Image (cartoon, rainbow, N blue to C red; front, top):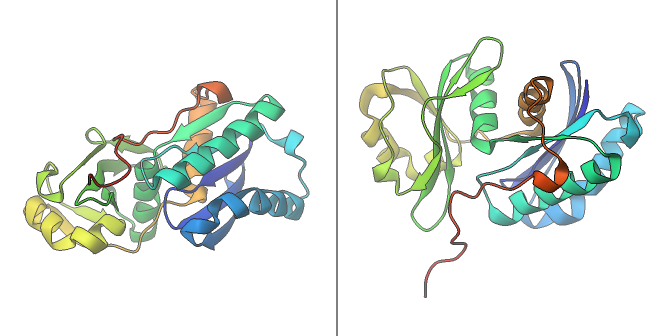
Length: 225
């Protein structure tokens, strides 16, 4: 299976090509660069691999939650490319991709993924990551004040993501002894979006591009006056 994967929910934009477990990734930092650089990165990566867009079997995209503009840019690009090629799209949770990458780097199976949602809130998800790289939610994804996140069951959890950089002390206090380590620098990446997307497509879970929708978890995009 050949996939193009896009992830733009944080300040680091990434794109990846996936072929049966082999992956190539390009990344660029700068939250204001996503709209300008995304398709350029895709074209460069395809050219480097010697692939034509028609060689793709499908696409995968980080569908959120995350930065509203970045999520919209990635989802819109995935829709446009998939529509032109008549290919399915796998909508991958940004938090699940973050959890998978953190679990892979730290060799752990339990990850509490958190992104800073601004306005005193975090995007939050707890995930069990299997040895085969599969990710299973341990509860619903949510957005809310860090003091209101649900403590995870059991122990041995890794706290990962920029939400821990901003709210690490609060989150650790809420979770108590369940958290054994933190990686606040962890970010969702297109290589993990690709791996999870390949599973979704292989299971027949892809959607038509017109059915692809971003997941924001909330509708507010600015602080009230």
